[in-house]
Length: 496
Image (cartoon, rainbow, N blue to C red):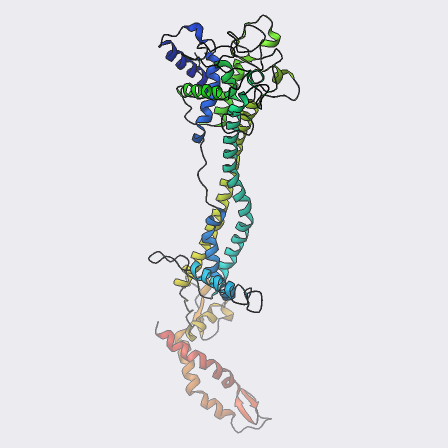
């Protein structure tokens, strides 16, 4: 056998309770329909078990950290007076707005005493500017999303409230939140009375089908005489049509409600729970009709062997023919149940969408927090600047020699080593030669100078060169410049 529905389980429970008290089975004719209707009553009674979404923070609460970090990294002008918006020359003549701004700004960058300083205002540095650029971008995007997020967050709760209202309407009627006993006065009074509410005529009535509670009155109380245990043990209430029956109807409802509560209660109320309860009632319509003509009686709840639901013996029923056969007519309680289920589904959709928006807002805040922490870390631990060592004359001389890749260009003070391990450095500095050359530059050049000294401009040749008003040795002019760099390079190189 398949798994039993909630209505079937409830029916079994009720039958066990009633038969254990010695009630004759013939007196329980309306129990199956009673159970189906009670199941909806119990769904309403357990409406507070509707699963509420986890309470979400407001958008402003989610981005609170991001808003504070914006002030922690803002320019001094923004932090001090919002870039002059609260100028004493403007609308804030008394400076009250400015005072509030400054107080709020100071509070935003100050953490609770003893707590970690995570909003400390950063000094005016490129790091602060960089962080604020990122934070302002995230804050702008977050601010644009907040209104939509807050609306979805509120809708999730609103749809649940709407579902509860619709459940109440299914039980008590349109715009009702409690049993309306005044509807059972009489045809001549303010209320429609039993006959109209139960659709006693062969065609039914448009007043029928508005409330589950009224349907239970129709199938569990007598009209012309007291009930005879049709719905439960010792059911003997009577609600007549031709007199003021408000009090009797209310007493009957109180008793019926107590019997419904003895049944198994739903653990939670969901859209599926509501739809299942409605479907169970629809499946019962016409099941207890024994009249040979099906045209009228197969629209009834409760047992009937005729074509009416007057409340006489064998006619404790409610007739929904008008609702099922006439255009623009409907079962009010069924429509209310369907709306309640839809509202719960809408609540879930709104909640899931709000969750996505909340995650996006949290992402913006995290990106802003990361930008702030990177800037703060850089300011707390500035990178060490490593100075490039100054190249010595020896290093320069070595580099000059290494540039030559052929022996014919490898001249003093360099030397060519054909078998050098590093083929790119076969031309290298000859430290000994460089030293001797430097020495010669300091001592031997005097003789060369004397060779040229005293010669006229016409005779200044053969290694001599006229410069200014004197004849000088041409090699001296070149080696003098070279010596100044090589002499120090050579001596430094000897140290290696």
